[in-house]
Length: 304
Picture 1 (cartoon, rainbow, N blue to C red):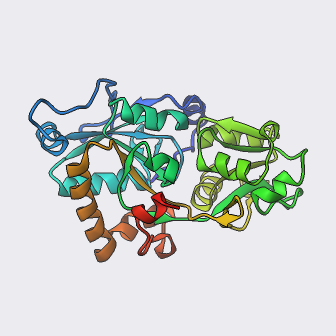
Picture 2 (tube, helix red, strand yellow; picture 1 turned 45 degrees about the vertical axis):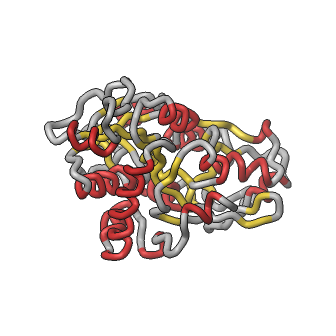
């Protein structure tokens, strides 16, 4: 796997802004990920079908460090690398990945265009009603990237709501959008982006006052883009929605009918949590021991 910066070349950044670049992380090198439906043949389970093909199709969102394209056009990040390792244990040798706008991830999964969402998607009750999540593979706090010195004194989404002239970029159809709305941030204060790269471009151009994402995403991307001179990441915080704290934690999403596959996937993931491979894979992307989800469960997150 390449260790080069995912945003190190201007050409790559410009290419990724649209959020529609497609690539396949195959042993033989990058290629195009097909958009055909992924349902197994009659009489086959998804697991049997993918073992036969030797490939699983994944959707990412071009959000370092969760899932992104590196300078060589290869798919990497915490979620794709963890997915590679887990499905390898299940008898599937390769993954193909396609970058998709955030609000297209779940619709595309349900439409059968890919087998799994590998984008570090937060597990929420609303999403649980639409898709089946694996057990969480990380937990995290929320934060903002802001100009150096944090001139607007932004600490939580409530502090944005209290300043009607402040604007924030969040992903369209994301939990951050829900956090902002739940804290009273007005629609005209929010710019909805397709991917993180696009939103950070807006911040650098002075078109928004802040970008709201996880601490992992913001710290990783600030370092990779070399933004430390002019910007900073605020202290992490636990979001409050309707007066109650929520638990930002995420994992892989599958179609609801793929129960057998999900069961086998969770077995391998449980082993990785216990034997340290989860942290070993994630540490290159900033997912340290503090990111380990511990005893948090999908059932708990889906019922919040």
